Amino acid sequence: MVNIPIDRLADELVSAIKEYTDDVAVGVRKKVDKTARKVLQEVKNNHPYDDRTGEYTKGFGITKEDGYGVTKRIIWNKKHYPRVHLLEFGHAKVNGGRVQAFPHLRPAYDKHVANLDEEIKRIIRNGG
Image (spheres, rainbow, N blue to C red):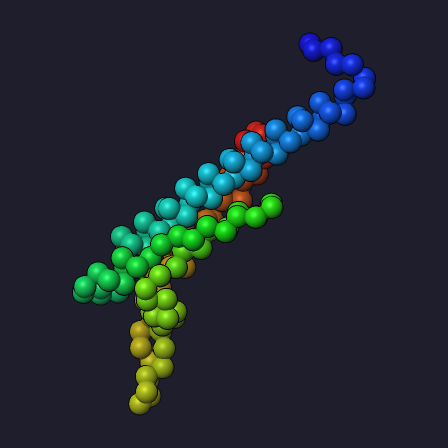
């Protein structure tokens, strides 16, 4: 057991809390990165549409947005971003009718992100 003088108690508490918070933030960031990579691989490997040239699938990437208390990963198509929602949800044809939808982002997201909140709770409980 460590003896801490009473005048240094507040500094030691602040230091311990900061260390815990930093460890949790690093753990959450790593878990979110790992999950985003899994979703990206799922989108690139298991797509229901016919990508004849491979250009559409190659365009997918991850953008990181980190801030104070925020860890966000965005998976998007850097080259063909206007086309993503058309493939995902289908769209109306010019002369009537609809084009078939090929959901590829939402199923991958639902598969890999379903238990992310439980994993983050476990990281918080374990202190990183």
